[in-house]
Image 1 (spheres, rainbow, N blue to C red):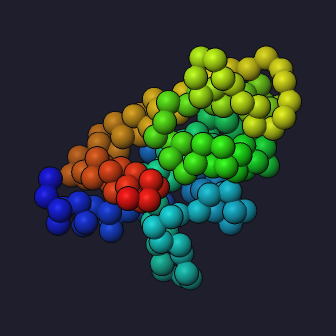
Image 2 (cartoon, rainbow, N blue to C red):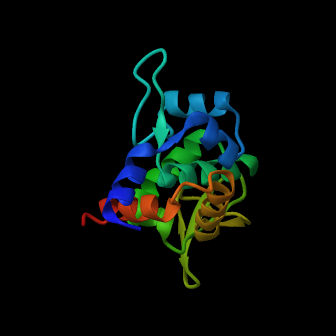
Length: 166
């Protein structure tokens, strides 16, 4: 893929209906998560009637992780706190790393290696796991199936470069 295609892909983003389809949530959920400050679009916020929110690939990965944690019974407040801790402990690039999030609905842990599990909410109980990298790969596959003309890899590479400061 040439530089012009990469630049064009990074400008397009994903509109709310596309995001809802890939993530498996309703528009109402997406709107609430944005308005509550949990996660809004990184590319373009809605500025009034008729304007579109535009989400990045990284936003979609994050939304899918949020949905899975919600499905496990975790509150949005706890998810927000856990994501803040992840950003602090691991950095913005946590979505591209081999991290497994574990939750029992009460607490959220991050397994960064077989030897290290971080309690993101400072509690301890039995847990289940969400491996973030497979979610990343699932989102990539879903987007490719739904939008075969979109070059997802270009968007990912551009976002990863931004997160690492390069």
